[in-house]
Length: 206
Ligand code: SF4
Ligand code: SF4
Image (cartoon, rainbow, N blue to C red):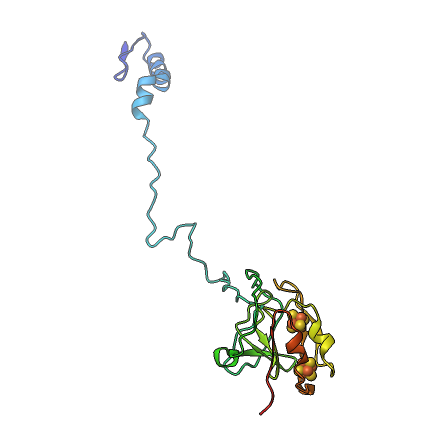
C-alpha cells in the first residue's frame, strides 16, 4: 500500500494499512509544503481614520492654557498734558543729547508749552529726562539745558530764591539752580546779569 502526498509528492509505502495511516499522519504534520499552503496570512492591522481628529501637537492653545497679554510698556519719562499737570521726573531714557549753547530764548513762553511741574514750579518742554530738561520757572526762569552749574546766580541772589537740584545724566551739568522760592524774587536782575551762558531770564509781574 502506498500514499502520495498531494502537496509535496512524497511517496509513502507500507504493507499494513494502519501503519501507513500513522505514517501519513506524521508526514502531514511535518510536510513543509503542506504547512506553507495552509498557513493563513496574518491580515495587516488597518489604521482607521478618525474623522475630525486633531493633531497631537497643535499650536492652538487649549481652553485651560493661559494666554498672557503683552505687558504694558512703562516709561519713566512723563507724558505731556495740555494743562501741564504732569509731575516732571528727572530720570528716563533721554540720554542722546549734547550740551546746548546760550543764551536762553526770551520768547520761549510763546514758543513752548508747560509740560508739567516739579514741586509747584512750571517746566516748559520739550522734556526728555535726563538729557533734555527744558526751561524751568515762571518769573525766575532758567534754561536747564544750557546751565553749566557754576553757581553764580545762587551766590548773587539776595533773597535766596535758588537751591541746588541734582540732575544726573544731563550733558551740560549734573545740578541746576532750582528756583523753588521764585515768589520771593525782588527782580533785582542780579542772577540774570551774572550768568555766563546767559540762560537766566527774569519776568517781572504785570
Ligand atoms: S532777580 Fe534778583 S531776587 Fe530774583 S532770583 Fe534773580 S537774583 Fe534773586
Ligand atoms: S549762573 Fe547761569 S550757568 Fe551758572 S548756575 Fe546760574 S543759571 Fe546756571
